Length: 325
Image 1: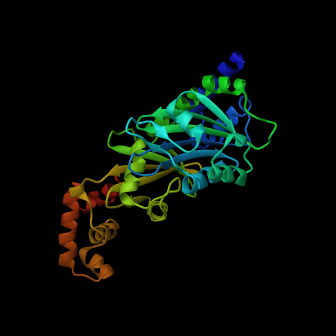
Image 2: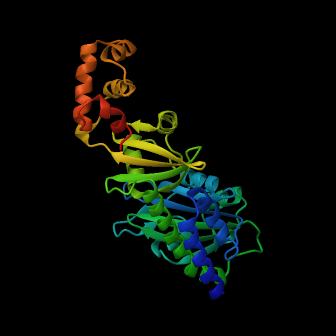
Image 3: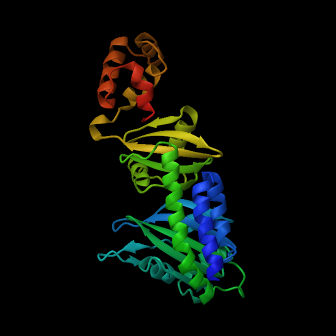
């Protein structure tokens, strides 16, 4: 088994370095399946807070895993952090795995005593669950595997394979994120990066990206991007908001999005943003005023405020600044 695992580990790192983002996101779970079989699976990141519920960040999934996790976090999620920073949960598998990151754990539905959890598991036909976690800075990374057939339970050999293999999966993910950042010129200390598909499903997410999106939309419910945010990005290639600026680049059928925090003193008002977007199209003061039903003098004053907030000298740099370059 060790020789096979060593070969797979090398293949994971090669995949992270050689495959494009879309190929990597589609292939990484399939590489795991021959070693630790599953009917559905997900690799995802989470943030736990002491004062509010868990935040489901980004997710790579196979079969119905994304829907399974999304429903869980909406209906039966009970995870919290205690004063010592330990995870507390009504789900014993979750509590064990999140308090001992780097190790693999498994459980059967028959061992669930909580009626709400049991009903949730049965809704998806789940019989056996496997969980491995890692600490990723302030967040958690997790790999969940599920089997639906009752006789096909996880065993100690699956746990042993998970302990050897799955830490390398998280390292391969980190390598792929780093390469993608360098490829798109996003390796900047004040920038965050996310990768999503055409529906806005988050596949990869830097730690600070979810925090920025939370600040912009208090009711945001990941792993889907906020609809107004995605609409602006896909329509015009950038987003300028109260708390963040963002630009997007396409990679095959995926989108790489860079986010940058907007300092409090630099936030554009809705009126300033409307003026800036029109002026960036090289419209004159009179033309912008006509579009917005205001006066050229008002447009001029608002644009001067915009230039100051964006730290630019005039209209020539406006389009570039709005793209959060």
